[in-house]
Image (cartoon, rainbow over all chains, first blue to last red; front, side, top):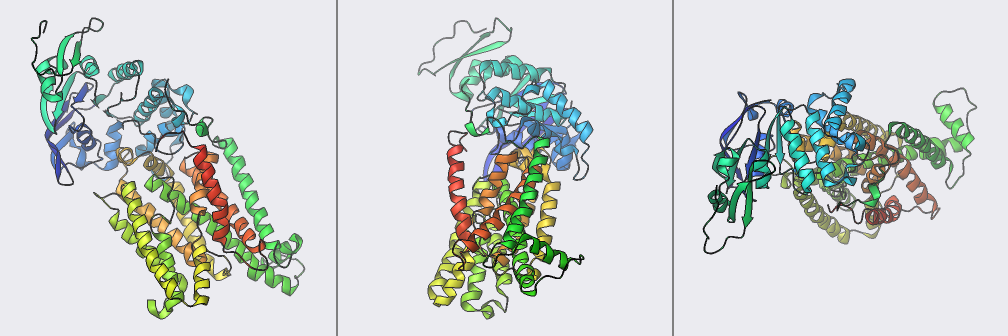
Length: 266
Length: 356
């Protein structure tokens, strides 16, 4: 587990500012959501955290260390990612994909097979994909595949897990199973999420981005208000309490030209 | 469930499990030896396999009856180096192609795609048509090697973006450079004398007919060292194949690894086209066949590619020598005639799979 504290992060791509002065904070062991419309810069901000894209300004601290002053390998030993469905073109088996998680822990000639095999087996078991180990990843369902990618990330033995819209293409059961699994993990988790209800139900705190700018930050119950959702997403929203979970539930509708009065806004 | 399940990958590659992979390696190694013996004994003058052993044994200093000098000449001076060159060229083209496919994450990747082969072609054609003096007295092989590296260098500079080589950009740059370089090659062909055109044609389609012992050492060393380095880095190649962002998150400096891999591919392919010309399709097809057999895991896939290439190319050369005997076909005619239908079959087989 590790504390994430990023501030003043700006990213330019081809002379355009994609992320401007964004912040991201996560206490050790918490699950923090990053929400915002498509193109708001969520993925870009996350890429700076797992060292795929260098920001032009700002610092991303893991405990007291700046991600970008660590070596690539040291960063990879702290932070693992689950990206949007990323099978690649080629036929890898589930076990081979999970073994990728061991790459930052091994040298060119140091194979360390025995210990690694144990870690890979445990990651397969923890994510419930042992029975798929010899299958080709391309033959799996979306939900199974996402578990495999999570297993790969766990085999990396990270202290921070970054997920970029991990619930895309998943059916509702797979979405809930994935988030249940994430909230039980003994690591800090930062996840970009599309589904506001999932964010409200599972995140300890959320950060909201719009047009690359930070808009709001705090506990989901406080941040996800009808006003914020309307301002950021341009849709009508009403918030209630989910009777099954006791967490905030968000109901959405097209924005009507003349906003009607909200009757039972809690 | 609405998942797509491409028919081709449902059961997994047949030789991926360790035990079966060992069987495959043993089988392919045997095939390399059998094809090599066949290649040495078949030709305009048939040489019995026992005589082949006799000649080879004699030259290795074994206590055998000295062979007939004419057969000795045919076997040791002409056919053995040719077969060995075939093995080396096949292995090298396969490795070069496999690496490019990983770097560009594109199944169409091969040394043509990043300008190497067209560049080598221009270098060779300049020497054939304008003479060595036009390139400062370089020989044909040296000019071809230089051309390969020049075209690769330009591709590589144009394909670069933000310190890395995004696959699509690299492919577009390579194709553009390839066409540009080829236009110069075609221009030179139009001004060439008829006998030069014949030489250019043979060079462009590739041939092992110029094989000689002294040409073998450099490609052998380069390809052996290159393949060894790649196998050692197999896990990092697996990571790169899974995506550039993912590779970065696994602690890989993506731009540097891409650079190393492309340079290696250019070096290996450059050495090959310099001695054997532009042999098409082997670099494209062999890695695909290897993936069908053992999956995409690079350590298995690269070793399999080496062995499949070392079987395929000497066989293609045997066909090129015997189909129209005593005349010889350029080997590229054979590799394309076998490779293109195979590729179409591959295309059909993966139809309905994941869009990529």
